[in-house]
Image (cartoon, rainbow, N blue to C red):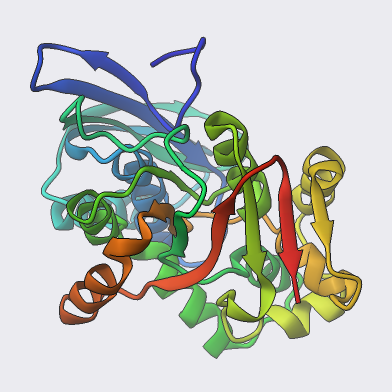
Length: 303
């Protein structure tokens, strides 16, 4: 998989049983704490390998840092990334830094996957159940933080979710026969879900009351506190989405809200759903059933 068949990561098949999965991601700070920033950036970069059903094993740091940034902050950023990588069983083997006006940090990540059992955006089939592994609302909350409007409790909740690895969700998806998958990041739930629908040649139906959100998301959304990417997402993906007229505009915008280190969206065969949810409960992996795959094209959002 490469530029001709875009997915969450590049894949190079080595033999019948192994494929290399390669990805990179980095960004400017989304939170104030340097350690949390590094941890979130690492979890976000690792997520693309998990979204393909792979297991990361090696990473390189990528950092662009202002000369005036205190050394202890640089150390905290790198320590945050290193500790999340260690949780994932990943070795950070080196990296590269340059000077820049604003901090930027992330990882190059290399993983392995079984080429016959990989998760791709193109495998969903009508009747499959859509399952999400993290709540929504990260973008509106972190934007409220930048404006000095977010409560400490809301920030702590979002940081906890963004630092959480998608490792267990990916493993469960593979174990219970997920036919399609992607991670929810900058293109928002609707943008990434639409990519899956288009790659699979299907439509999706999402049930708004079943969608999970972090605690402060709706309050910030009602004030239209969104990152700029939310409007871009709505402009680009909105024509393919039909909303129930009873869903307020601010609630609609939450589905275009860019996420950082968001959850996995998985298409699960309906006969596997009960067993999946039972096992997820045993391993402390939250999962929400948010809709289903249907015949047709585009996305319907019901009230």
